[in-house]
Image (cartoon, rainbow, N blue to C red; front, side, top):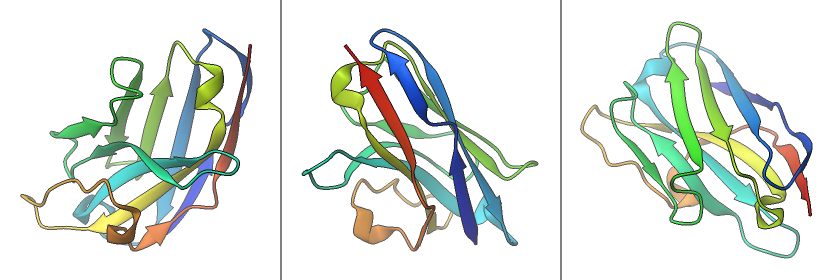
Length: 126
């Protein structure tokens, strides 16, 4: 599967952005999907993840209550709605796919994900 992330940009603190990750290839619905982010000088970290059907989601504590992950399997797209953005949310955001059975956990470790998009820059100004 190939992943293409988009939707990044520059926004003021308190603002919102919606990221999209479009997938090409077959059997998109067989993948757990996640968003990771990497700030300058820091390691890549998990932000949010969703199960194959979208019925289960999980978030990092740092974004819980502000970010919402969702997916549309008919269109092979996963979204990350980001509200109440903070300067510390500034990072390159990557989408990732993990081939999984229906009951598989949503991993927060980047090593568990086989496919990655190219990243989209999000900059939040104070």
